[in-house]
Amino acid sequence: MSLELRTVFGPLPSVVRGENVLLGGDYKNKKNFLYTCGKNVVIRDLENPKNCTLYYGHKVNASVARYSPSGFYICSADVAGNIRIWDAQSSEHSLKAEYCKLNGRIKDLQWSNDSQRIVVCGSGRTVFGAAIMWDSGNSVGEISGHEKPLNTIDCRASRPFRVITGGDDNLIGFHAAFPVKISKLLKNHSRYVLCLRFSPSGEFFASAGADGRVFLFRGDCAELVREMGSPAHQSSVMCLSWSPEGDMLLTASTDKTCKIWNVVSGAEVCQFLMGSSIEDQQLGCLWQGETLISVALGGWINYLDRNNPSTPKRMLYGHMKNISGLCLGKNGSTFYSACQGGLICVWYPFKNIDTAVATIFKGPKHKTAVCDVLICENKIVSAGLSALAQLTGTVAPVSRWNALVPTPVSMDCKGGTIGLACVSHIDIYREGKKQHSVSVSYSPASAAVHPNGETIAIGGKDQKIHVYHLKGALNTFISTLQITTLFFFLYFEDGQLAETRTISLYGEVTTLKYSSDGRYLASGDSSSYVCLLPTDTYEGPSTIGNIPPFSAYLALLVKDNRWTNHTTKITCLDWSPDSRCLVTGGVDCQVIVWSLENPKRPVMVPRAHTDNVTKVVFVDERTVLTAGYDCECP
Image 1: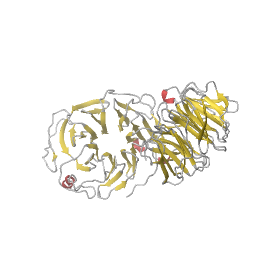
Image 2: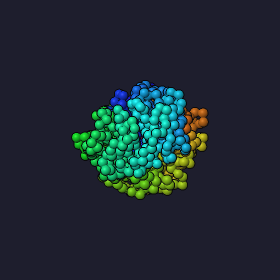
Image 3: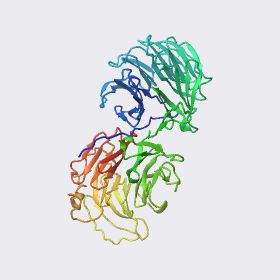
Image 4: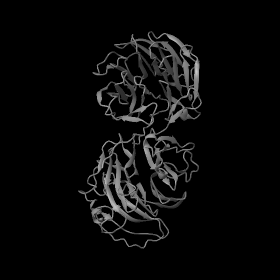
């Protein structure tokens, strides 16, 4: 048995209000475009955006990435001032060079036209920019003249080479190159300079600022040609991009519009109205070939339609914050994901995995992080840090109930029963109503509901599993066992939710799951151990495969005989539909599939994600869906 990566459902660009999003174009092959999300650099097919690959090399959040003009390499930078040059052609993306040139975030970078030099800028402590040879890291001049951090930089593609810079001091720096040396400072903008770009031929360059103004200059001498509009936008112009012919200019603004400008006349050619909400502010744009795209504050990517400016051709949705919830839809035809940004996405058609795309729930949504999302009796149930919401249909919520649930930490649903573990109590919901509630003295960390809907197991930070029963009476006598501090005991109050068993483990019980047939309970803990327990007390052998008797399961709790292939805390697990396999994920970025018939030989994917694995789901007996802090679902 082995696992092979089939596809990746990529994340959206990381966005911050008031900061632009710089998209990197593939001007050689005109196929892909680049952006960053967390520690990842995302390489996405422009025409078929479902084709997506990720580069995992950065140890801190990546900030910008650019193709070299030759198309052979990609240079990416991060918030710690590191730049990495790596192979753009091979699937391994082998590293060619790595340097640290600034003591702070690199906000922009650019290659020279011969793909030999790289210029970078950002928010260093004393130096705000650098120009280097890509293969040696040797300096090729000094970027100076500015007294505050730089936001943007570009390099002229034709001789004589020039470098332009713009920053928080409202100045545009015009440098001779190479070596780089300051020539003049331009004071046309009254607020921050946010984006500077040379035209493809180098004849002109354009500047965009927080004052809403866009200026056009000659590329060889920085002589002002004209201003676009008066002003170009009603709010900050975050980004601009040239058409391939260099006769048009695309701008994106926080006034919720994108515009196309005629460079020769300075006239507005087209205006794209992107919406009216704050999330419709436009932070980035790219013009590559015949395709125009923009990035909204909400994170989604808009494909602009010049023939219908009021409606984008398509919109790419997804997540840009840590994914915290994942579940399959009805009949496995869709899957749903939720993130710590409060967003819930539905992906379909899932049966044709290579064409799965996402849309989002419209209307009201969680204002805080979503703890989890599940399917309960063909309805979608999501738990946020401040509310439990019931959502139904494909794209729109129709009702919300119990809007003030105090900080849920985990949720599970089986047989119409929703078990919700909160910070200090356990709630049981049925048919949208709270049926039971019990306060607890420990801190819950995970929850699992038995398929019969009558039993709920709660994993606690006290290193114990607490089992609760929902029926009115329980007559079965449960014997007391003591093996490696495992205790069974019984107390029950008629007609109430009460604790029936407590099982002590070796670490905080971070995840729990009953098998599909209800015969086993699997747990994962902060000590990296996976433990398996049957749901009854028999001593005979199991009827599934060659599973050992109950006494052997108790032996799994013994220090030298536990499932210990994870190296640190286990965060999630799930059972296969036939209850013969178990998949786990952890903080060590691993995904491991265990066969109950041969648990000593699990299938391991050591770097399934670049950060914590947060959710794992069996789609069928042969397909596993995973999600993580890197905002992707492979």
